[in-house]
Image (cartoon, rainbow over all chains, first blue to last red; front, side, top):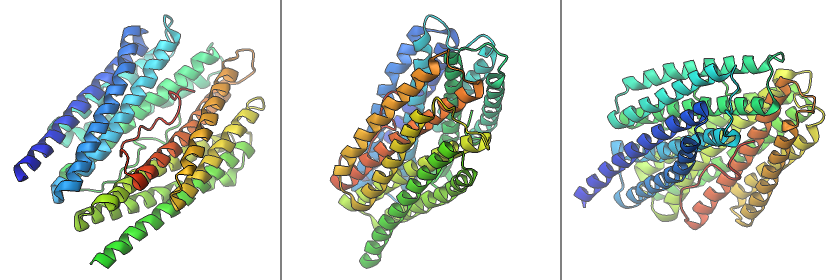
Length: 225
Length: 225
């Protein structure tokens, strides 16, 4: 019985790692789809979201079974509660990657992001991708030094979002209404991806150290573009 | 020991009801702030968000203590796991209400929403407020008939968001860039509030009936404006 229990906990860790790997891939693909107007990448990201939903459901079911049958305490309980939160956060990241891919797809073969905004959105994309990779490494290694790197990158992402807002607010810039909508939402979704990576970092810290289970979903600035 | 345990579970229910009441109030105020350009309402909504964060943290701590000390099973376990998810969803609703209030405040004393879009945003606001009230009633009564009403209202909200998008996309409409940003984000935040109310309904259903703990955060359409 206890040996099975340890196996189940180890399996839970493996499922979390796998999910964080697939989230990181989804972010990469979504950013590539947006930046390059790559339809195949967009479709792959949209399709992958359903598999991330399934992964989250699977993790949740493992957690509920462990709680119901095994009466876990201390660090095991923290792992299971942390996993319930992680699955939800990473599932939401899959949704956001899909939203970004939907923007890319909706304007294909044209690019969604206007030329003047492309460098800024590109830098936001780079930061989001790098945060996704740090998140994957953190879930796998539980090396809390990575949490600090994640926080720094999130600050960069927030700053870039402010720059995007400033660019869009310039009424002399020749944007169509559709471009403004896409730019506003793309920057918002990229910034939210970063917030969720910060949440993941807090939750892994909770699993390792047993700090508060609670983490607000707002990683950075107030969240307006 | 068991009597204290029952008291703690009852208290958990009371805290959830109180939080859902305060979320419903926050949504009402945010919508009023946006619609009427009411600065006091905006400030109240922004301030209330911190109290909602505290409420969520408090509920989470109660849940963790119950799980760690009481080995709850069956319907008690469902209540506690459901409460952990509800607190997170309602906390996020508080964030969204704050975001809407921040939009209202940022343009004060001018209205954030242009005259041509005000009727549509007004109807989205009405739907979001009504969903917040249904959510409060549902958490208090656990009457699952309310869950169907919530789903219907969410469809209305999603349709309205599509109408807002269509309006904004019309390049002959005389919007400033700032108006397009505010309209895009306000509609997005209102639509997300509705999605979260749908999540709450699914989670209350889980508590009552023991269906899957998992619910995607996307209540309605794919989520683009």
